[in-house]
Amino acid sequence: MTLHLYSSLERKKREFIPLVPGEARIYVCGVTPYDVTHLGHAFSYVNFDVLRRYLMWKGLKVRYVQNVTDIDDDMIMVSKREGGRPIAQIRDENDAIFRADLDRLNVLRPTVYPFATDHIDAIIETTKRLLALGAAYEVDGDVFFEAQRFSDYGRLNGISIQELAKLDNPESKREEKKRGPLDFLLWQRCAPDEPSWPSPWCDGRPGWSIECTAMSQSHLGDQIDIHGGGSDLIFPHHENEIAQAESATGQSPFCGYWMHNGMLKLDGVKMSKSLGNLVLARNLMERFEPDHLRLYLLSEHYRSDADYREGSIEGLSSRYARLTKVCEEAEEDTEDSALWRVFEEAMDDDLDAPRALDLLDQAAGKVLNGGIGAATLRQALAVLGFAFADARGPARGSLEP
Ligand SMILES: [Zn+2]
Figure 1 (cartoon, rainbow, N blue to C red):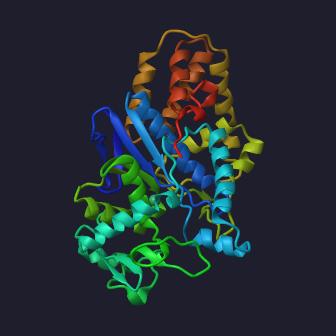
Figure 2 (cartoon, protein in one colour):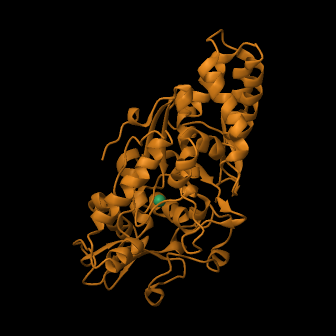
Figure 3 (tube, rainbow, N blue to C red):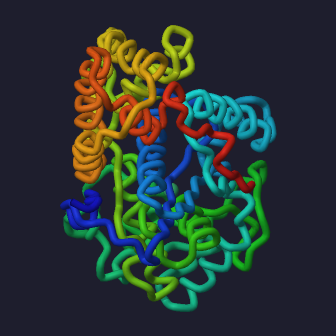
């Protein structure tokens, strides 16, 4: 079997065929560093790390871009709350903590790690193009994308514009100025005490979704292979990205495979800052080895809304001990082609890491009882990014600012 990935656009698994044979261009929505990140973020980025490592193991050259949303309502809210503290300072502080967490979890650093504020020119250029094409309109300094003008709007969510308009929409602002309820800001006026940039429409700042379109085009071109992010971004963020990108470039599809990770819950409730039920990867790594936490994060399928509970990580202690013991003690020996085959079958099936780990755990039991296959087992665990199996480390990924 060849690699099949579930794409949210078609709502089914499809064979992964990149635009350019032998290469994969991936864009994953990054964080807004206005506060610390939580276990849900670690779940997402560890799983996309495994996607990247698996594609590399298959021989593909992977270019992985992950952005930083360093200008938006939340960043401004925190800056104001802290007496006008510069946004760049808030970003750098939180981002350093986030990156240190991911380094400890052995997540490869992105090929490119762009900041939205470094792409204001590209954002303005794309907005100009959308206006010139009639896909957007300006009202007194604010520029909106007109959702109704994009005939495929709603396809990613699989529902009509009428149904979408009934959903909670974090992009709903300036209702009184909009032609349609799903129109969203590409450029916006801002208050005098907020950071702003000159533009043809007003001194202002970008909307939300336009930044990802500008950054993916800047670093990956008009069409990409895989776009990743949390399932909470499907509406409206990713729906808007498709509408903007395909309208601006005339190229369709903007993205071949839309991959969305599930939302990690705590005791059955979605983790969120507003509910105050956040579990931090950093705190867990004071109690558990980072690889032990990685083992937990890969033991739930990336698309599942996994439920974290106290004891979830402890429950994997014997498995963790067995796998590390095999890597430490077993003699290197010949490869076990049967183990490779079943490992690859599991991973080819939309990255079924939980099944792959079950198979590797069974194999570890056999190796420890005097069987062969330690070399294969160690290499497969390295594909899943475990440092104890000598997976390549984060610093070996490149990272352009
Ligand atoms: Zn994004």
